[in-house]
Length: 486
Image (cartoon, rainbow, N blue to C red; front, side, top):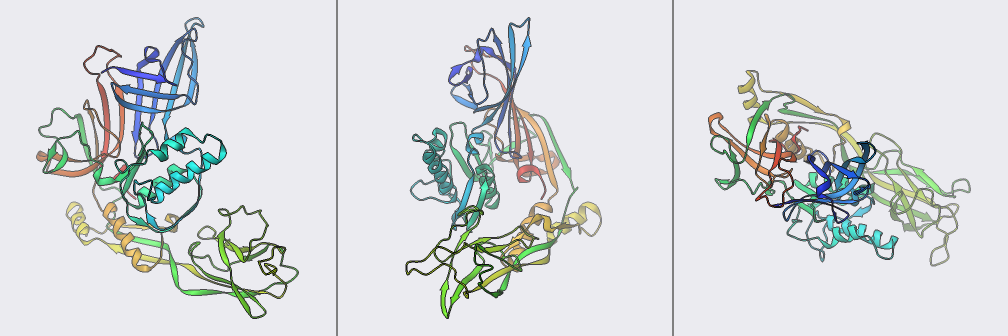
């Protein structure tokens, strides 16, 4: 199958140095990238950043994206120009707008345009924003939304309400994926993929006991230059979670505040303690001569900008500061707006009463007795390897019981003996994030692993008459998703 490279739909295959092509796909960074060199004689080819680049192997797209970086170099008496190019996949175009909103508790994903999960709603919101900015909308945001399909987006677990304040979509999707044991990427046909980590299997490998497996002892087709290393550095069998943020079970009542002529304009009420989150305000009540009005909450920085002083009927704006700070506040805009009965939003001698759930810090321990026994066998000690999660991890839970669950999840990864390695393969179809087994009978190894990164290069030149082109993939794998301990 012939290798073809197009730039803005124009075939530039004959100008590309295929020895320079390197395609990098990794779980440790968002988006694939491709590096390649183009030689142009007297301006016959002139790449420009922003151009769409597609490399195909026959009918299979090995890369598609946007030229993001380019360096020019003059060669051979000012007649030949070398363009050293770097392209990034369509994730670059996804991140041109930010996610800014509150998303109710729902399935993280559904793959259904008629029944949005959180992911589908975000893609829809991005499309709506693009449609509002121009008469024709944006072809890429249209494609990302219109290509939603259950084939590529699987139904995910239900998650709690989420708030994102000016966050890049790729970061939002990574956060959602990591929280639900899913994996996401944008493929070369502008489709968002969102799948279970353990279901994204390396289908090009043979089946062994029902699982896609690379059998080291006998497989002479799918790999060469195989290495496997074990490491107990960073091993942890006893987790100590320090300064975890826990939601208070009792309400905190803020001292009742009297409205005066001195504080009535754009009233800002600093809260003595940090609310657990933006959903932890129990009530903000205005008392006007014994008539009580429960006010409606909106969020500063999301529902409006912080310098917007216009009032909204019976509405307060909340800002929850960063953990470890006392910067949280409630803001009630300045005098001037009246409700349907003609009453002002705030008036002198009103009282504002605030009740909320605050956060407090807790220290928690978890152990894994089975892994302690394994570590004792390996090291000769008692098998206890303590590790500490500090407040910098910003672990935040609604109750103490949740800390047990989080501690167990952390230990499951932290207490494993790390196994990682690499191999090269001439088999096509490798992609970062794929799940498979490494089976090495001679070494008693039978381990589930993930492809952490895949680097591809083309070993054969462009040849339309070739039966097949040889693409070499170098795969780095590990028995922990993303190849790192927590």
